[in-house]
Length: 148
Image (tube, rainbow, N blue to C red; front, side):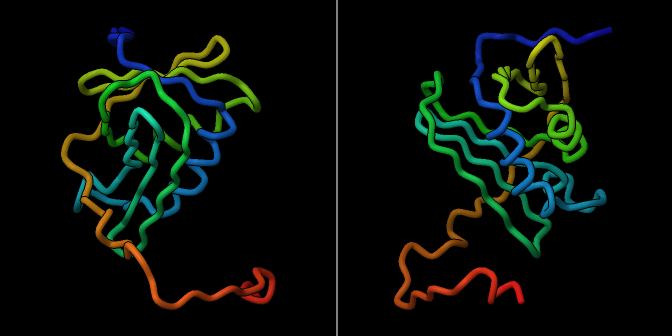
């Protein structure tokens, strides 16, 4: 039976942005059941921007996209890694994606496709303090040289 998800809390994103966000964060999700809240992508939707973050306790990645949303207050969820991966694989290019948030579920709608997923329970670590507010040293390097 397909679950019913309240559709009063939602936001709309471009599929390209959602793909990029998952591409930038899925690699650092934890695997295994030691800390279940780390086995997913934390999605935080603010009135002015959306943040995607993941960590496995060794790596931390964050992707922030500035866009006005229709939400008045912050929503924070943890989407399981597998659900985020499947959504990312099936997203078409340049489509509008509606994301509906409910208590313990999410509904992602694009074209004529609806993807439902349960969410992970718990709290994602407060990682904001890991990043320094300011720095005294700045370096500018050529990307290609750094890769070599």
